[in-house]
Length: 368
Image 1 (cartoon, rainbow, N blue to C red):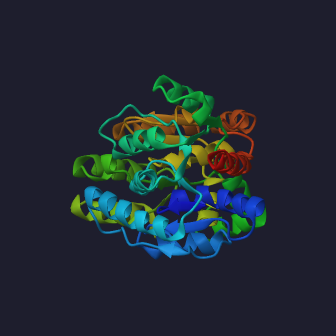
Image 2 (image 1 turned 45 degrees about the vertical axis):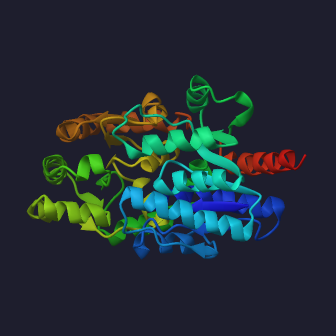
């Protein structure tokens, strides 16, 4: 079966699935296809090495394209790959252009389609990801919903129950397998001169925050202001770095500890001890529920309300970042105590095994 990835979160979340498929059906059963949605080695290559997985068997080049160009190119290229390899099923994850193109190509070739992390909805039509999710869910032969909320979203859209399975989210086993031990985590902190609960960790990359110079300036100003209270570590996405330059707010970065993108293990180590995380990443919104850390979500809408409802995250506008972080810090110890005993809303770490078994059953049913 073909496993399609193209971005950092897809690689991380699909790694447990790749392992389970190979364990269930035999080594090499998962044909891994990397669409190259991120060309930068720091955003893709290092993750394969860290995850202990071999390089993808097929590598495409969809990095420097418009959304329309990427969708067209990937749909055509993946169709050719599927025709050549004839996979028994195609597995896609999440809501990227890679996901939508994989779904379209599988549908065109008449191959069983499995959508992992199905049913997410922000109800924000300005987000390209929202369209990608909906397209993929409605084409999928099997929708793997991470939570009951996602399962309910699919039912509301008329997707039959026999095409939906509740699996949990593979982020749980991904974090548990990648999180370094205590000594290694503290070594990462020491390399940046940080101490546990004594710094903030930020990531910003979504177009809603980076495409508007004014919005991005507000975010960078907030981070710079918070740096007067405690260090702010900011692994900066390559596209965000370009946007900062375009917004002419590079001068503010002098007060922030800006670093290049880092690997999954290092990021999780830093996230596990950050006083507060500040991010617009959907993956981080899930990871904090496993790490039991507080998060400020810089978004106007979210497809992951579970993290907020469980008390791990708060969603704010850029102008509210500083005041929200300040409030969290005033009750920090009490909050950490509560989060430590709050169950993760994304399952118990068995999602990948459930997905692999359900996919095997889908393939067998299609043979009948």
